[in-house]
Picture 1: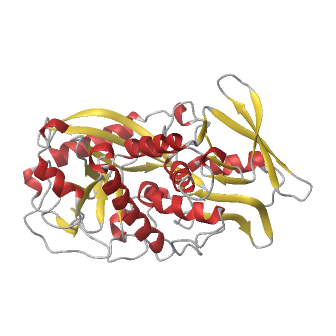
Picture 2: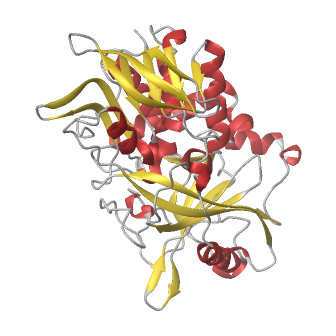
Picture 3: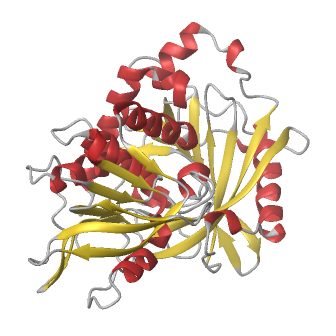
Length: 413
């Protein structure tokens, strides 16, 4: 049976990765990506923060599964060196910290630190890149349930593994229509190369839509008469990638001891930190900055300024807002110290969101309405990287009709 996965971001590649490990022949799996540049949106420009138990009840099981899979994958494939997998101490400088209530992160100024289930007492651990005037932040998690990756490098690894096994990549290309047989089952999908404009058909008996913020558009293109609606919208977020004078770099200076600490889930404090705080943009507006240090690259990533910018037709058509970048630079100066860092990258990406604040992971079915043979995996909001591997395994199991490894019954349409 031929499986087509539309979307070659972190979710799509995770699905292909686990599906190609199962009974499905890798040569019958097709990844399709319409963007001229791979990993050009959230999959390549997100923070890469991982959490085990920061999720609402609907996605809690998926969160635990995915966190454990991230650790397992990193252990088996030297993830620390290859995509920067490291345990990370989660901390907060916010004036108020939630106690596990299910806050809507998509709301203006809301920090996802409010989803944390526990707060530990202060200790001697603080980010070395944090300006001394800020003192000791509160500890949310000492690294038992939080970690860090470089999402772009993780995506590169997953895709390379899929292709090594024989998974097909169609890039850049877009799906324009599907064909069903006399019994209503999917039989093929029509593809157009957006580089050569060649048109061709490939077999397709199982279809997964994992196109991030563009998922609803892809569904409408392929199923224009369907009564189903895919409630996935977009939320833009700007970010900076910084190089601090007080944070280890380059990789060659990373000691073996530091490497061992980063790779394991017990023992000494991990050297990476996630820092959540609050910032007033003006007397009437605030936002919730998030900073993440990475190893072995030695970068500090800052984001948290969200906005409802229009979704571009392609991820590569993004336009950076200088005002948003200015706000982030101001926050970086306050937290890291003026003149204590260099900006290596300015970016904006669009994350797929849902009104419910949880992803859609399941068949394209709601009530009596259904598109048979179609699954949706999108709407992960700020948790796409963290939930990626769990989503990939669960959707691969769904596609093959197997028992799923996490409770995702409340994540359907």
